[in-house]
Image 1 (spheres, rainbow, N blue to C red):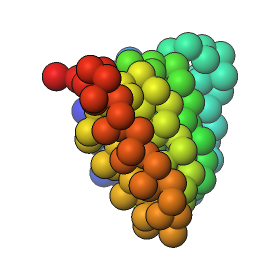
Image 2: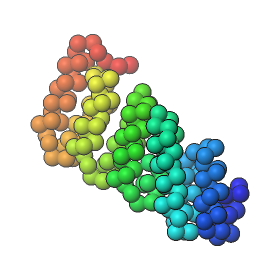
Image 3: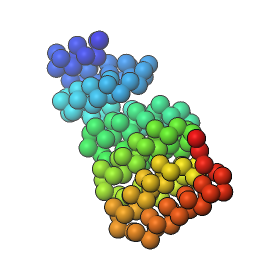
Image 4: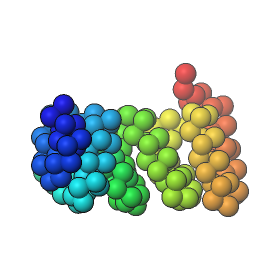
Length: 168
């Protein structure tokens, strides 16, 4: 609440400092969005993003900081940097499908379809007969113009399913 009040009162750098304190306790996505708006308004976006990039570097196995840095990079128009942190988050917690999905979504926004399909292979390896991931990878290859790879992905999923590797 103090961070919101500082933002409303146009407290500039002070609001960014207070947002950093708040986000250091809880990296709620709505707070990240509000903090990035306050930082932009005060011209202190780099201070906010830099703090969480440093947190991620200090604690590279803590997914919170990678997700916070991703969200803040994207919110400050650094989509390539957001994709980099999204990849990092998925590598820290590879069992969390939403991290893979969020990374792919960012790659799609940047029209990096082939890269997204190849990235999703990491999730697909864990679940070779998952029809949803195969369909998504295939779609991405088609959007990227590589129909041969799209077909190969579909065939591999069918073969895995036939061998009893399907997920339920």
